[in-house]
Image 1 (cartoon, rainbow over the protein chains, first blue to last red):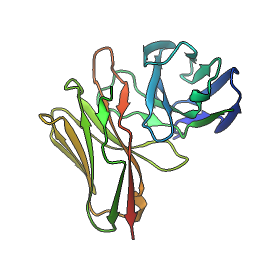
Image 2 (image 1 turned 30 degrees about the vertical axis):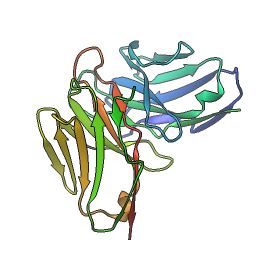
Image 3 (image 1 turned 90 degrees about the vertical axis):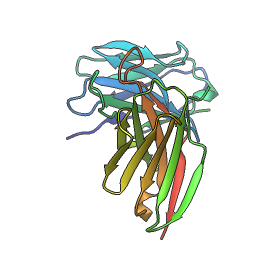
Length: 114
Length: 115
């Protein structure tokens, strides 16, 4: 039973560039959430996708956008990269609107901005 | 404005003793509380959870306690083992409404268990 998989594992970009991160949810899950974890902090919620629509969004600028595909996989796009975007980006999957079921996380993509 | 706080950045305990990790939250509308464990270079792994209708949940060596009046959550690990050394995050979630499914995390506590 495959868990949540993310690619790439590491990525180095320069300021102003654009990046796309990818996530495949745990088998059977239909909802994908994205989190940003800065060094020494807990993960912060970016947004959540279900049925190919953004269902909720955290306090992140429009430079952060996403997409969900019919097979439930998801992409996170970040435009006009800033130094402060350097972080670990985590993808989590779950069942939509199923109470008391924990989200399962991937191992993340480490994004470094030079 | 931090809604979830873990005030101890680190905790060091001896193998075999009890580890107690604490977490405070501000919003009484949260109704599902979780603990995740994170090893370096890995994603957070779900450990144990509790709903707001309970005050205790136990799973093997791990017990979570919820004090709703104090808005306080704690995780007890007994006995502690060196393999428990990791970063522990508490997280809260609304089980319904417009914020359903959004996890809000604390800053984490680094637990070190010495042999």
